[in-house]
Amino acid sequence: MLRMPPVERRLGAHLPLGLGMVKAVDRAGEIGANAIQVFADNPTAWRRRLEPPKELPAFQQRLAELSIEPVAIHASYLVNLAGTDEQFHAASVGVLASELRVAPGFRARFVNIHIGSHRGAGVAAGTVRLVDGLSRALAESDGGPDAAMIALENSAGGGFGLGVDVVELAGIAEAAAARGIPDERLGFCLDVAHAWGAGIDLAHPDETDAFLEAFDARIGLERLVMVHLNDSKSERGSRLDRHEHVGAGQIGAIGLGHLLRHPRLAHAAYYLETPGMDDGYDAVNMARARDLLAGRPLADLPPDAMALRGSRARTAPAEDDEA
Image (cartoon, rainbow, N blue to C red):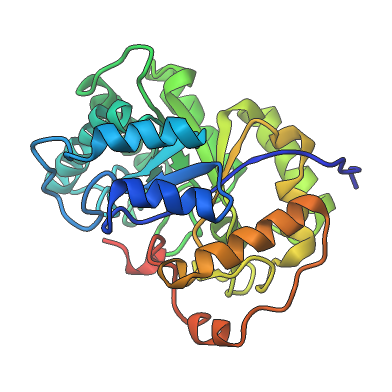
């Protein structure tokens, strides 16, 4: 097992903008986050706003004042570029292109999307469809020095989810390169709960090291730019995506702490998508993540945390429930 020295990390959370964009940045500062993930628009609707939010300049200024970066935009849950339905595919391309176009205004470095479901067509067909959609979305959005990178999020595997392991992720990376998509426009997001649901054992440091070595050999760890630091309520290999409070699930404090402190992921930004984020548990889970980062033991969760354990984080619907 690798020896883990004390490290600093860009550690953030997915925070809602509904109560105000500046308030969301202020909340990030209050809970000790130095990065943030947000929705740029309604995550469950196809229609995108026609004009930038009026609060956007103040949002940008507050981010700069608090040195909160990188910003990640989580794309709409409706996006599925890997499926076979032509109308759905075209709509997904349009939404992703919209997210990419607005990203610079949000100071967003990443636009994070779920890789999606091949809907039974198979991994090879799903990969072709996905890469076609990525290429089209990039062509329909602006490039330039402030352009955001797409960060593809691995799947737990439910509902024909694509991208469940290094082999499938490497296949996507290779197909994207063959299509001419630049590496600097396409990276990857490791969702820890999804990986666990797909059968990847991130509870044990040696297994985590082996996974990261394989990712580096096939894809390159420099392209693993985001980590969703979520514990899991589900059993490993269940193909289910049920997020849990940091260190309180099946993966546990040892596994999450090892991943959070891993020296080969010093470049990556970590974001929490844990239960009860709208109910004060953003601060609770951020404190727990900071304890793991410092190598401190975790305190007991508040008693009312049990009431949230059966519910998903609002920012992360289960794959088997997604469109």
